[in-house]
Image (cartoon, rainbow, N blue to C red; front, side, top):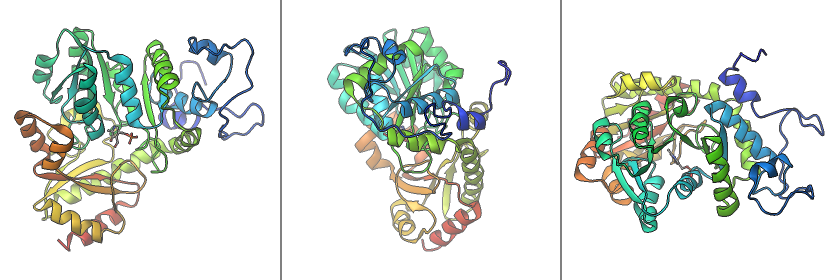
Length: 403
Ligand SMILES: Cc1ncc(COP(=O)(O)O)c(C=O)c1O
């Protein structure tokens, strides 16, 4: 290929980071489970010089591992990032970013709705370390502008956010954050790099729970943090060598394997999700459907601008959420009534607004009102898989007929 030609997404998903194994010629990556490597005696035990150590070869798997390295390179190529560091889970990537960037006295502006684990980290753990957190509805740019302070060090958001599927304009928030020199981190798990590449829009860091669409098969937990090279080298030393939350090479290998079909899967997730969303919107027992690809999504124009794939996540509301959850859990045959998302299989789970606000979000009255605009009393969060869309609609039809 000419040096000017940039490979497409499917080619990157198949080839980036991988070469035939130099020892055996194997064309599919081997899993390297070794914890330790015959070392060059010039490598010191100190890990102060990560780059020097990497150049000298592998030493110990917590510092670096060939299978993990292959996955990191593939993800960096898909996201358009300079560097990628991998973790044992999405939450390990998020907590590593916070612990690395922040110190006592720093201010963080965080979206008021994020994955519940990240919200609980911000509500319950970071304040004990002297880190000040303000939460804001990141879809409201005026509110974001007012809430950013000269001492804001990090702006943290998800788009579409879990569980609401509410969007944030990454380019605009990044522009506001840059005025005060704050870092911007985007958890892009719902969107994936096939839909949105936050770094191209001005963000500094991107987070993925690899457990979801990127791994894609519901069989491996992992997390990724992508961003600028120098900062991630320092972070790698702090977060992996000193805090230790590395991904298992076996999980890295499973995710590497899953990634080969990632763009193909995302197209199927999107096609199916649009069919199911439109079908649900026309169903008499369904009050409201939220899917970025629907014209009725309150931010459909932003979705069209910022997402080149509307992904597989949607929500819907019914009259009696808890009662319907009981019926669906009993009668669904293709969908699994289960948490998590982004798997090849379709998953669905009811999220009650009052209990989620109490356990995880702790929103102010104004924030609660804007949460309820998207969620009412509660939502079914639906992750649409890659089965036949007609079977998904038929499954929902037969299960809802029992309500
Ligand atoms: C948007 C988002 N970010 C992060 C996480 C955490 O990922 P993990 O379960 O891999 O720790 C999740 C998990 O559901 C999520 O939905």
